[in-house]
Length: 349
Ligand SMILES: NC(=O)c1ccc[n+]([C@@H]2O[C@H](COP(=O)([O-])OP(=O)(O)OC[C@H]3O[C@@H](n4cnc5c(N)ncnc54)[C@H](O)[C@@H]3O)[C@@H](O)[C@H]2O)c1
Ligand SMILES: [Zn+2]
Image (cartoon, rainbow, N blue to C red; front, side, top):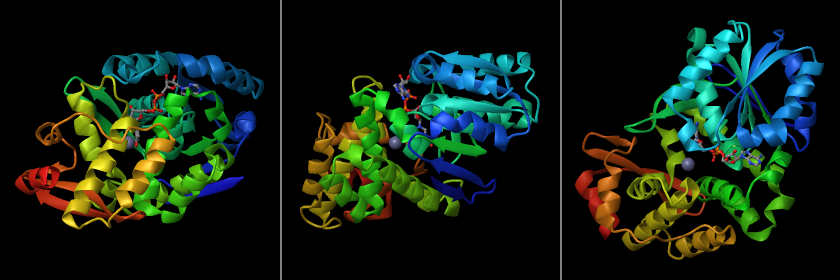
């Protein structure tokens, strides 16, 4: 088994192994002395994995209830958070007890925020079941819900007590959801590691999945340990995201997934970088080739003005400045802070 120790303010361990889900009830029973828990999951994940987990935990002597969300981003809202608080209360969850988040980023973000705030904070475990959750959302302690004004606007930094990551769980994902996660995986490669980029280009992903997930977790862990609260280098995890978020917003979060938007965003930034001499020539072509391998789009019909105006609410904007991530060559990323006029010029050159 590969174990990663994340040295944040509240340190914790990430266990990565194909097939580990089968023994996760024993791991959880060893880890916690409490025998009272609530599993938070969504309908699809409950149907495929939730019932199994529930029965295994019952056999370990747990008393537990299951809170099931409808699938999808729209579930990450205040109404469901409020229902979850009541559910935790009725399930007699006390400060010694804990929550299990079994699912993708939607489940992890909502359950993690509930854990941060219920009784002023209880423990939670992440069992991520999507590629996005395994390489990104279950690590780093960002938890949040969406409100009408925007996505992830209410949340907390709250590290889990333990992450149990089983790459075998990804075998039931639709290929679209899997490829969406590959957008984030390629982001890590393009920003931090030429060798990961080459590995992804040369191999069948299913032959190297566990080690790729492990690599991505290490890149995120290293960044998060040095900038837990996202004031500096953690922004490097945002390669492709400023333009990507603008594209998602422009499309009202419909018809284009997050991974697809990030894919287009990375290409856009590198293309502009090449024109300005910030990015080495022909690097964008390499990136496009790898993205296409995973059916990710590299362009979309949107003007630079629309990208600009839809970037103005970006979380990486501070007053008149916005910080973007550029890539000088595959594996080497840099933060670039521009004022809004400079940013507009960068997008349009
Ligand atoms: N906290 C962070 O740092 C962070 C980072 C990245 C993304 N996020 C958040 O994560 C969310 C997106 O997460 P996501 O992409 O995992 O989407 P998701 O949680 O909506 O899952 C996508 C779909 O896959 C299904 N699914 C999940 N696991 C499955 C499995 N093993 N087999 C079959 N189907 C399965 C779900 O039911 C759902 O329909 C967004 O809300 C985003 O804001 C948070
Ligand atoms: Zn992302």
